[in-house]
Image (cartoon, rainbow, N blue to C red; front, side, top):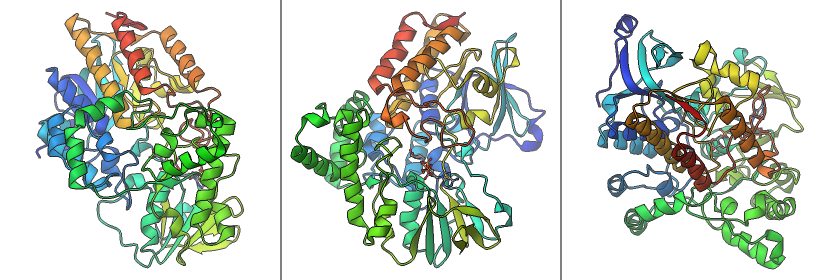
Length: 545
Ligand code: NA7
């Protein structure tokens, strides 16, 4: 498990090491990219700010953290041998095993020696005269590379969001964000805990802490559609089926609109009788994961009437779970909130938690948080005394990770300033005009992220391979191609219900952040085709030399 780490005191004076490519971030994308670029014979270094590999699955160690994609479809897609050797224990694997899986893959493919941990990149500067990037780490060390692949994650742990609550510094208890969870277990038994936020993370934490906390207070701002996960152990028979059918399954997922193992029903919702529709919904409800969203009628997130129909079914299902009808109404989403306008959290015992005596809901639509106090949170209804507060309040998506590094392109222009001045934009999701040989390597298609991740990893690998074959050393997206792509992405999401509400999908979850749909609403196969068409058309949209 040896890893390259320069002693801090020597780092500043150490000679500048030069690589063909530097990857930033050891999540699924960064590791997949390292594997592929190494396979092409490139000299590559991967820099990771954490003390271990895994990205999301390294940082997020909170109780209940697990996949909401099916385990067998979340995996790396490039090695049948890896799939044969690895056993998933649950249909939606929990964080500790996923972190183990990623470590297993890193060791199996001999990648560890190319990964530098605890390596926080503070700055990346394009040196035009030398045609290279120079990166500076927080310990002063400098490295150079022709290509930089910034695989920072769409929901980077480094860009976790904590609202600016008054008086937090006065609070004498402990507060945490799930992205920064300690490695040592925390004993919540009998403790008074507040969870702020009811997205996927708040839901997973609530389920676990409800079982142990003395009193759990869940602060909910917006009730949303939270569907059944239907998790369970993987039988030996299913395990065998996954291994035997690995290649077919990967190929199938690659060709579905959203990279999962299911496809939408292409009948318009309202062309089906109510009786048949609701029987269909009921069948979906019994199915695991996102099927109720992505295997639903295709127009459920496009057509308001279709959406309202399924949303009504969904609200009925939530009501059935809560014993107290008044409380149930507080947990049921408003008919004004379209189903699917946010990534739907998935649950096992979330709604049941509210039937317990030790769990209470603070409905922030009627009770506001005034400020933190020494002992807890002062609300408009009085003080809630707490030992722990957990901010399950989300992330500054897509741009947050990039904003934390001084990325200077042609003429020293900062990437974050370009995005502030011109609006957030890329060419093909992966490159930015004015930032040669730099990849914003974040899966942004509206899909199962590992499947989108492999699409962008393959494309970046192909682009670099073609440049090397032709003896090219510099590519840069033209401003025209960049602007056209921004417009193209915008036209894909305009009018879609899922882009209509504030969430991390569109930056609306961060006060003051410029809003724009940050995912790309294209299908996964459609996106892959667009990427490769640009490359095959002699690097269309790029200036190359
Ligand atoms: P999300 O989905 O962005 O959820 C954040 C939650 O925090 C959400 O319920 C927010 O309420 C709530 N929030 C944010 N700011 C506040 C303030 N100021 N006061 C009260 N509540 C607040 O983040 P997650 O970490 O749960 O999930 C992110 C993704 O990770 C998820 O989609 C999966 O892909 C994995 P709101 O609903 O905005 O009213």
